Amino acid sequence: MNKVCKIGIDARFFGEAGPGRYVKNIVEHLEKVDASNHYVVLLRPSGFDKYTPRNPNFTKVLCDIAWYSWVEQTQLLFQVLKLNLDLYYVPHFNIPVLYPGKLVTAIPDIIMHSYSTERGTTQPKFYFRFKKFVYRKVLGIALTKSVKVIVPTYDVFNDISIHYPNVNKEKFVVAYEGVDPDYTAVVKNPTDIVGELGLKSKQYLLYVSSMYEHKNVERLISAFEILIDKFKFDGKLVLVGKKDKFSERMFTLIKSKGLSNKILMPGLSRYMNDCDVIELRKNALLYVFPSLKEGFSLTPLEAQAVGLPCVISSISCHKEVFENSVVYFDPFSTGDIAAKIQSVLANPELLNTLVSRGYENVKKYNWLDTAKITDQVFNKILHS
Image 1 (spheres, rainbow, N blue to C red):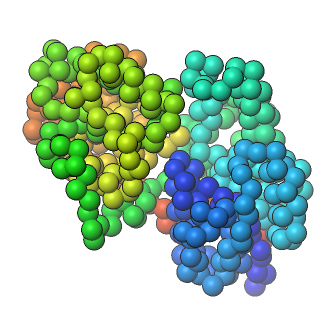
Image 2: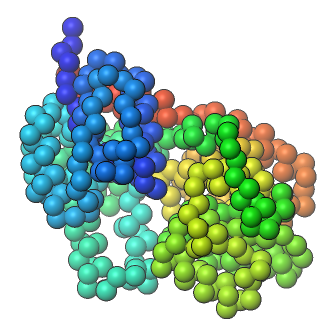
């Protein structure tokens, strides 16, 4: 019989956007698939309050240490060492580089290699360059030290293989992600965000994500102009994202084009919670996602889960995950973005086909499978 092992999980992102969605779901689904090992889940205060273990083998521990900070390399290291773990799991790249034990990482993407530029940063250039240098070094160490590296797509595996050709390819494991069950559950008290924004059901296009450089929102705005001017589209475009310097740049661009009454950015004036986003998805006409690079691309999948047809960029990650369940456009061509959106809007039969194909596509991905693969990785390392 295999011995009971102690596994630590760096879950400090729990409850946050981006990597926090991954952390939340992998922790909650590991609880469902592993009834033998003991887990210690490290959380910051906000995540500590949000997470309640349902499996008695899971224990949460407060770890109020900021990510991407120098104290990750000192205080976090000491806290993890005191736990005397058999295996330490970091579902990101930001490991304590001097950790001497068995390590598994999950690398969601390496987008910063290609689409983190001085043009896109809001930081002083010298600090940005230093930060990017540190990022590359820490990621390289994480890839080297990890016994196994879990990635969400073969596209991410290929990217890492190109940038880090000396890392043993046998250590990589592909584990697709899925839709957070919170996004498909029936909302008991749905919000009236659609009415609050003065929208009408099925008369607006939707985008949900950040406004970072690689998200390509600037071209989407220009494509929407073409949609109005050339194709006489009479609806609106709703851009949902948090308030930061990137979204404020897009707001300034929208104002300069005289499109403030046509393109809405509700995240600038209020916090958009999950219920708001679910209601916007359920009532939108089309989901448009022009990103230039993704690791897995969850938001189109979340749209498909509620019957929202998708028109998205023809990047390799999207083609791997979505196959023929969406309509693709050239993300570098504003004309093609507009034309492909119009081609779907003008074809009700195609709209219905995309809805049904979307529902089928979503069935291929779920977090329980992700957790099972992750659990197999752990046990193979611990008991080999």
